[in-house]
Image 1 (cartoon, rainbow over the protein chains, first blue to last red):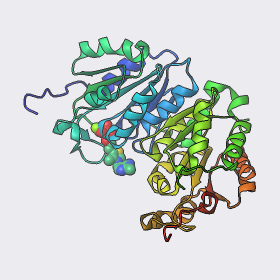
Image 2 (tube, each protein chain N blue to C red):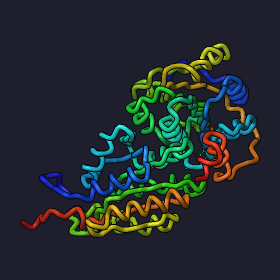
Image 3 (cartoon, each protein chain N blue to C red):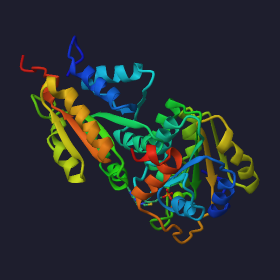
Length: 199
Length: 176
Ligand SMILES: Cc1ncc(C[n+]2csc(CCOP(=O)(O)OP(=O)(O)O)c2C)c(N)n1
Ligand SMILES: [Mg+2]
């Protein structure tokens, strides 16, 4: 735990940089600040979770299995990912080639008052994913490293795991739409067409 | 309950009901009562069967499946129901369908007292959350109950649990 590097990237910069290259990627975001970040670049191909802490990675797996021809990217916080740690084992075992997971790791539960998470205490989510059999796992700290990682989020063989160390900057809640039934219908209608979405 | 030379037809009836309902993803934590069904799902080329580390993963996975246009089913034993409670918020709030098939423990001739707290409360806890609970008590009704439950879930966008009575599974007589 000595000599650990600190995250300096700004989370909203990270979000903007990633979605700028999303193309037709389907995205799922985990509750808390990552969902708020996604709200600043809202898109019908993004499903934002506002509850179900620990659900993000597995929601991505179900979506990736249902849409094998599409890229699926899950973005979520370190706390949210820690609550669903078993999901990394399930995903490693299932090995979906079209799934990537990006952790916005500020080493804190920022939503609930900035308490430290285990990632600040030496737990490496990237090493967990590696040990669970993800095709690739990387942990990054700088803008240059982020630039190099973004194409992998959208193109590298999955399951791909990227831990993006960010600073502890907090932003105001950005998103207006938070009704889950609406977000689900919007996502399905855009992906499947109205006829299939509501049959 | 134990997997010694049991021969029963209702697991095949459940499988047929899931196929008829066009289920494409099946998530499970193993239970002895689901042995044959898990094997059938794993062997079907049109079904992706996913082994979970905990039941709540299946709730999230099938929410993702539904977002992507796939129907799914989650298999578990009654003790797994307790692992799911908060995660049920996702399909319940989002009005997504969810079909759960739950083998009951802690009721009919149970030998393990540790199964009782969850088994005796599974139905009530599910109902308290807003899950519609349907029961199958007899072998010849299982297929119909599961198919009807699938229609309820997928055409009304609601969360349905089919509880398979422990009576179906038989019990080991530990007094002998
Ligand atoms: C089951 C459950 N436990 C606790 C909470 C409270 N909660 C909401 S957000 C959050 C922290 C999320 O932390 P992280 O994923 O690291 O997000 P960030 O730091 O980016 O906000 C917690 C603990 C919750 N919503 N659900
Ligand atoms: Mg955090």
